[in-house]
Image 1 (cartoon, rainbow, N blue to C red):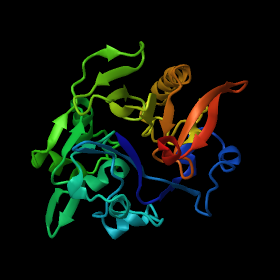
Image 2: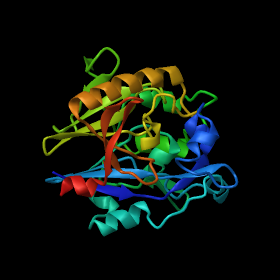
Image 3: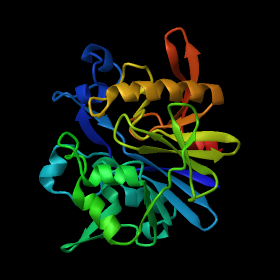
Length: 291
């Protein structure tokens, strides 16, 4: 098994929304905002190669939205999904499986391309993986969250016949965090969490005797490890708080490696207990781990 970091574009989001109740005087030291209070964030994907399987976790924002839409998010950076795959020697057609942690536009927008006036799967040879609870949540969105669930990113996946659901099997890692054994690959399972959005999937990968957890939006960055750092975007922030507590306790006990999707600088970290609570121990790239 080989693991690769796949960088896509960076985008900008309001710092207050990303850090919730934490005051700007504190968070601005971590990820300084521009004159419009916007901070840069990555949309970092993970690629898993094993034999004939090439599995991509999330796929960024894509490129089919309108100029007006993209003007709100200020895409920047030197990488795209296509250029990153090409640099690794792959193309979209090589992808066999696409794991969607959840269906917010910055995680699944690259799933569908617009060709002429048609919306078609960007990964024509891949199976797309979600779970039924989250899929129903996304296709029947609440008023607060519906701006993040864009039907053009979601419905064509099912219409293509390439969508499959991970089956929840009721295995509990503890009383708070559900673990789902995956049929996708024997070394991949999922942790299901519900604070950010309903039934978000955190892929958990067994690799070289270590466990890597793709954090999606439970912990968007290293900066979000302290307990009060919870995004204003989360649907159920108190649920997120409990999920963070249980996950971080488990992660430090089991020596998990955390892989960050949105951290603008840091790809991975380990954890340690400090006087202030659980914090990052060391930060490093996925390539350093692979070597």
